[in-house]
Amino acid sequence: MNLPPGLSRALPGLLLVAVAAAASLVLAPAITSLTGVVASPLVVALVAGALLGSLRAVPGVAWAGVGWARTHVLRAGVVLLGLQLSLGQLVGLGWRGLLVVLATVVCTFAVTLRVGQALRVDALTRLYVATGFSICGAAAIAAMSGTVGARTTTGPSAARADSDAVGTALALVTLYGTLAVLVLPWFVRTLGLTDAQAGLLVGASVQEVGQVVAAAGGVSAAALAAATVAKLARVVLLAPLTAAVAARDRSRVRAGSAAAPGAPAGDPVGPEGARRSVAPLVPGFVLAFLVAVLVRSSGLVPDGLLSAAQALQQVLLTAAMVALGAGVDLPRLVRSGGRPLVLGAVSTLVAVGTATAGTMLLT
Image 1 (spheres, rainbow, N blue to C red):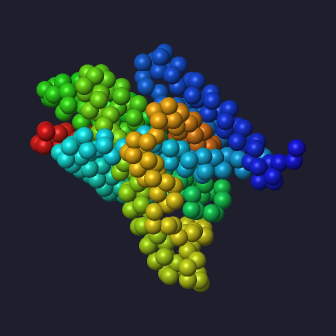
Image 2: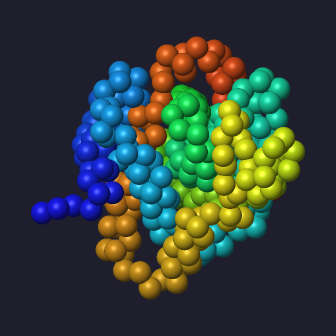
Image 3: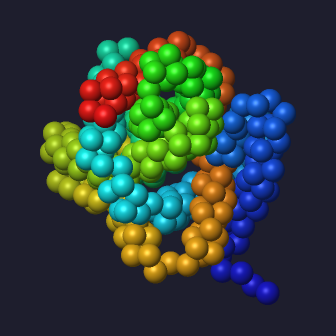
């Protein structure tokens, strides 16, 4: 049977990504069971991809498929994430809880960007750190990369810069999210918070969904329920955040094209002579994410189908993490120094501090 040329080129890379993703899905729960530390399949997949990339173990014939997974598989996973959210869950949080979540997201994102600039952390890394720490860890970083990073078309150097930034942000999410799992149960008890308050604080401040479950579950079942709803409220904010960044990037690219000597109007030129496309105000996959939220909110989707969609979403995002990780250069990350570590610490403190203040003042 003759395969279409595009599929023939992509097939080796897609097979490589699929095998690594399957291994990551098996390894993550095993690591959690053995160590007691919550290991997200997404993070395990990123590490697997980074090892493949840094060891130059990805054959040249596989890069077409890896690139396809980095873009299309990633966006499909983000769209399916919308089926895990409903507007009814947000209403149940109440206006006070929603205000705590919104304040935490806005403050964490804005302060992280500003501090990252002061620390001279590169623009992509500070954007991805701000997104991951303020919204939902790996999935948010991947969505932002799909919105911003994929539009640079210079080739290997630009793709590697984006992958390095993603890798750094995900490493920081893993490090500080794990610390939060260990520290926050003790912290909320020390403050004397109710279960509902403790869950709101944890859900509004901890990065990964798995980390939220582990941290709030260490308090009580009631705290876990409250934390899950607060966390889902943060995930909904992924759509307006990516839209806002795309709008800002769109205006900057247009301004840059007007200023670039010899560059024709409407033909933006990015770093290193990169030709960049003008982004849509709201990326198509973000609109699809919002439609998925509305579909879930309608109550018409059977529970069995929602469970299947959740499982598929996990598989797709895990595969996308392998593809993103394959472009990571670990030696370069080591050479990046301690500035990203400082940025992650600041971002964590801002998120926890804002969520704590909001919870104690408003609830």
